[in-house]
Length: 202
Image 1: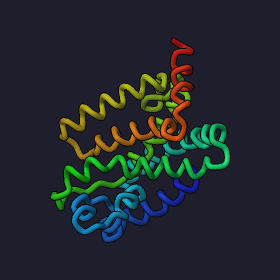
Image 2: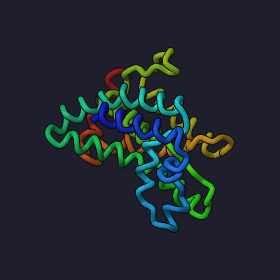
Image 3: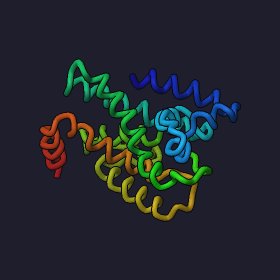
Image 4: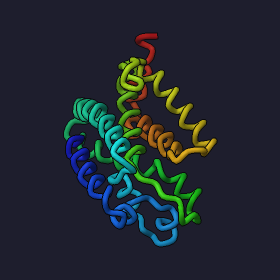
């Protein structure tokens, strides 16, 4: 599933780089979703990206942790694992923009693109299943996943309050929270699994 999502996302994103009409049609615009009922934008925005760097970073993270989630889900849930994977990915994509949808529902000029909310959901689900697995911060510095998660949430919350850049930090935050909670929603007993893993090292 991960490879398929990467291929589709890369294909559409690259096509949209040179087609403003396609970018405009697919990007998340809260006003159009809310007032014109263009609900498809809650999903379509995740298949277009602002530039090559945005696309490459998201796809690298998706490849790295999406593959792990496929393994965890197959081992934990068996046959429904692919369906659950898609629910996690697209659920993260939708949930991550619900706050922005409400906040910017009357702002015609607010637009957002990228799979960051969905990718954050995948990343945090992977951390849930193996909280002490090392994540390479900036690709260089290995830190435990649970430590990275805390830093990531704190940074995303802080930056979303400042609102001084063009990054949808609130989407990162909400996507991450959704991804962490998703396995528990599927099977509440997995919370015990996470706690056992967490304190195994502590």
